[in-house]
Length: 484
Image (cartoon, rainbow, N blue to C red; front, side):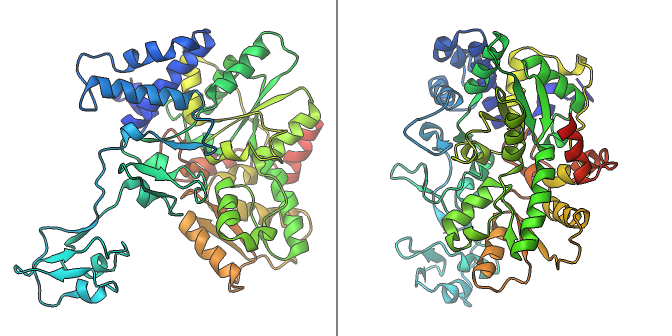
């Protein structure tokens, strides 16, 4: 307890996150204890003990939804290749009306809304109130934009609003449906659904299997590669105690993905100087956006793997028997780990939410543990976690490698909308910048959908974490790790 706030409330932003965590924690507990077959009989009763429902209309529906969450916590549907899935039974409370005229309509005689509509979808009845013909409306929103009384509301679902690539639509049953051909697995819909009806498939069982086999004297060590955005998570303890907790789980070594960012910065700076134009490759959702919406620009994606994959590749080169588990705030990393170029190096991907569930499933008290320092990366590798960090690191890498004469003109794209604007201009040869840093999540990785806390995208904690390594250059960090 701190300042009267229960610990569990300080771990998560919302009750949706807490519910998801409860399922993950109990699935992990059952898996560690070799009782996985009992999940469906035990967990719904643990989370929804009864006799009254706490969130839904009845206790039976609550338990049915928990059962669907268990499916996703244990890997989800094998028939659906997407890492993101909709729990249909939980998706039934959102309005589906689109743009609608509210009681605030004054029946004015200017009829701005009618004039703005290019589909003749707006008419006025006997009482001079506006009416929208749904058969003609294309949801452009022009009417809402010009109404002087803000009388036209947009009742799109939160998931539809969150999806910037228009991959979500309503099914015949009025539940959300994801178009896998458009989806880039960014996870924005997962984060924004108020009912937790959209979730990412968990790989927590894969991680437990790896850790258990390692404990049973299998011939390999388990390495955790942690994203630098971890510095803004687990706010109820110190970062060094989280690293101790990971060691207690069975990880042999914890390595910073930021060191992979140092490797990427050096290589990417040289590649940019050689080619003259480049886009970053560290954000898998940004890369997927380019592949799906701007295929003509894919030749300009950096040839480097992401920091996650680069450092994992290095680990496996140094220790061929190693197993590598990445831990971060990103759902799209789970899709990236399936790629042919990445699969040999990354054995499993966990989110910060899943790491918290793993720790608590083993009843590990982080606050009681000693601190273990992470000291792999440079300042510039660590600030990859926030928007603008990649661009700053490339500038530093150009300087360290004697390439300052290159006319470096970066643009840092903060969020998918900004990425799309820059890529559209680049596709038309109208972009003055020569390096695009693309971050699908607003704020960068610190705004990732699987963060424990989403309420702030303040980069100060990441910058502070980076400043702790200011004594190293990018090349110093790489050389030190190579020696060890």
